[in-house]
Length: 358
Image (tube, rainbow, N blue to C red):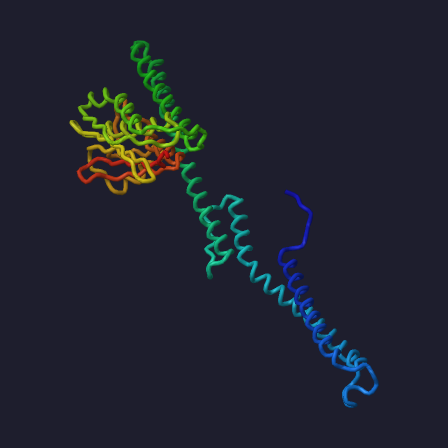
């Protein structure tokens, strides 16, 4: 934005310091002069015949007062310039950091030292903002790279299938159609998951009371055939709890958690879905048996396309690696928290805490 040039903040503060100092000095000298002259007679004899008269004192005091005011002016300008520069130094550092951030460098931090004051608070807030921006930009870059890779894979597979079929006249046409349909379905799933993930964090939904216990039962009923196919026992229980948000999005949260618990399980395993009410929160817990999870793997499960080598499957229910990322994004949009913890005997415990509906 083009703006007309103006005085710097340092120069404005310097002028203000000098003006106030000269004004205070002038008032002080005026008070001294008035206080002294009120007791001095205005005649030729003076006070008791030995003191000077008012006229003589006035003309003697005026040059000294002018000299003092001149000294105060110079002292105010120099001292004000130094003090203003010292006080505005933190703002200069903050401006430099903002300028670097505007050019794409988000790794710079101010790290202002000294006692806690307004400048220190501003610098700390700015450092926190830069840290979050750097984290979000890095996450978006990783997401874009992973999304490109995930979308490129089905296209490359389709191209390879078509190339093979084009070179082999005897290639089974029905097999070709089935494989292309399978690859195309996976590409559609990835695209829909990416669109949902991009929309879920925008909070563009209507808040309404949602019964989490009913949502849990609906999700379990929908996924019961999958659980029976894999020999997994589904146990849904708990008390009736309500949260405020989108029923469709919260259903997607529970569905993703339960499906994740079923798919990444062991034969004859178990999935437990439990709801309970706390003082200020509605809690949903999804717990499943399964293979032991490394401690360093658990914090990465909410990142897009991070399945973990020990949790990867290769069947039709493998998913696209966005299930827990979508859950985390939806829960965050509802001002809630998602906590993941590895169970001692294997498997995962996912806990969703949402603000309770009053």
